[in-house]
Amino acid sequence: MKIKDKSEIKNLTRELLKHPTSSTKIQFFRYVFVGGAAFIVDFLSLFILTDYFGIYYITSAAIAFILGLITNYLFSISWVFDQRNINNKTIEFSIFAVIGVIGLVLNELFIWFFTSELGFYYLISKIITAIIILFWNFFARKITLFRAG
Image (cartoon, rainbow, N blue to C red; front, side):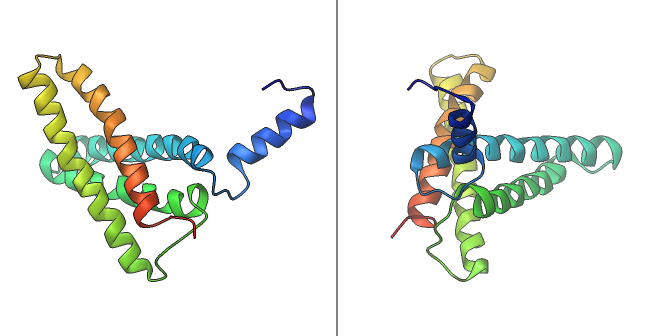
């Protein structure tokens, strides 16, 4: 796709970043950023709660995970997905959270598998796993909660 002038760049930017969309490609593009923001909230919360407030790191990790999950949910419903299948926000968030917890369990299993069974360095395992879980979270949420029609 060739971009001919500044107005095309402006239109493309609006499409990718601003306008509501039901395009799976654009939603996935946005979801990558939302996941990154949620990770930053999770990671920084873990650090701050543990190092500055002296909270036990396992407790901090649980709190940080919840804060990251809430961040992901709020950005997902306001920016990524324009269709909602469930009108009750409590039920919607509960399902969103269950998908996230399943993702967390899958994360642990895949990291263990790639590291212990295949012999990958644990950080390489984490990178591979993060990509798998990104797809899991996006498509499970899109199909279950934010499907068009």
